[in-house]
Structure formats: C-alpha cells, structure tokens
Image (cartoon, rainbow, N blue to C red):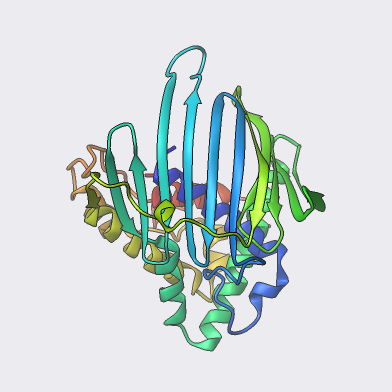
Amino acid sequence: MKRGSIIFNCMITFFIALACCPAVSMAGDNPFIIKKLPFRTAEIHYSMEGSTRGTAVEYWDGQKHARHSDTRFSGFMGMGASSSKTIEIYTPEKLINVDMSKQTARATGNPVTYMAEEYEKLSSAEKKLVNKNAKNLGMSFMQMFQQSGGSGMEISEGEFKGKKVMITKMMGMTTYTWKDTPIVLKSYGSIMGISNKTVATKIKTNVRIDPKVFEVPAGIKVVYDHEADRHMRMMAKRMIEWLNDPDFEQHMAEGNKPLMRRQDVEDMHGGPGEPGPAGRDKTSPPSRTQPTKHDKTGPDMENIMKSFEKMFGN
C-alpha cells in the first residue's frame, strides 16, 4: 500500500476515534501526541491469512516503533501476485521504510509530529476550536459510513488475549484495537473481493528489545525524500488551518472550502500543466466558486473525502 494511502486511512480513523473519545477535547491536550502507553516495551508477533499471507513482528520501546514484515500477496483475480520483506521504523523525528528485497531505504519526517507542532502554535481558544471541528468531522465520517451500504459502523469494548480492546466494525472490516494504544491486535474482513485476516499470536510486554530492530541494516543506504517531507509539512499546516475556522461546519456543508489551495497543488505536482515529481498528472482542487450538491442538514462528505484523497492519497 502506498504511504500516502496509509496516512489517508489513518487520518480518517483518527478523526473517528476523536469523535468517540471525549477526553481528547480537554483544554491543553494535543490530540496528535500519543499518550503514554500502558507498557514500557512490547514485542507483538502477527500471522496473516487471506489475500495477504505471512508474518510480522512489531516492536515498541518508548516512542520508537518498528514493524518487520515478510508477506506474500496472492493478487486480484489471479493477477498482480507479489512478495515483500520490509522494515518500517517510526520515531518522532522520522519514518523510514526499508525494502529488504531491493536493499533500499526511504526516509521522511513524521507527519504526525508536524501536526502536533502546528497544533502547539495555536492559542488556547484556537485549540478548543480545532478539537471541536475535528470531533464534528469524525462524527460526519461516522454518519457517512452508516449511510453507505446500510451496514453502518459499530463500536464496542471487549477483550483479546487478556488485553482490553475497542472493537470497530466498519465497511466490511472488523478491528480489535488495544485500549489506550494505537495498536491493532486483530483485524479481518473483505473489501472488493480481497479478504485478509491479521491476528496477534504472541504479546510480550516489558521485555528487553534489541536496539538493532530500530536500525536500518548495515549496507543499505537511507535516502531522505525531501520532496515528500516538504509535502507532509505543508499538509500538516493546511490541515490545522482548515480546522481552525469558526465557520468550518458552514463551509463543509457548502462544499466550497477545499483542504488544499491551488498554489499548494501546483507546488506539489510541478506547476500548471506539468506532471508531478512522481510522474503523476497535476490534479486540481475542488472549485471554490461552484459548491457541489449537498444535504443541507450536514457537511458535504463527498467533497470532504475528495479533499482528503488529494491531501493524503498520493
């Protein structure tokens, strides 16, 4: 999955979680900073079945997090089968994605850290406004999912391997997230004919973690992607500006306040009429002058989703 798509999905999940958790709206809380985890260190082993088969191990030590995966994708309709062996390293400063097969490594800054930094620049009143608008956006996403396909979204509490979990059922997927952490211990479901099941088979906490699991293997050169990093910084700034709007709900209902400015799109994709840095054609932001049709009772979620895709889906 592309990094942008991962960020896109994570951001939508974040806003939904924000809507379901009143505590993060308290004054002084920075919703983009992961709170202290209920363990000092953790080592979690996973098995994967379905369209993607294989194993993965996640390591947590303070604010450092690494995921070592060895997977095989069966493809779709018998096409596109592939295998991969990767290491993903997360720190407050960097994200590093290592492809062990190609012996390459790509690094960028951490977009969540950039969001947290932009949030801290706000006044106390502005922080309250951003929290309020973010929670409302999460509620709007929940309403959208409830209206799509009639299956809706269900959230409940439970237990998995002795850990308290939040169980979320949405759009054909069920996830078990370790309570008070961002860690998914179990997920399963089928989307567009692609079924997957990932289950934590072993959970060890407060154990010694080898520091080498957070390092790029010797002999692999890390290339810092300055263009992607600039993109992430710009999007973090725009997201906070977007949420720090007293008329946020009205603008979303009218569908005339895009997440990205035209100049941002041109900067990101190489200017008017030019392909982007990765060979993509430049896409234009939603029109400012011609609002899309919408339900007068709430935000125009089609417009919001398109804006999110432009921001995080590249």
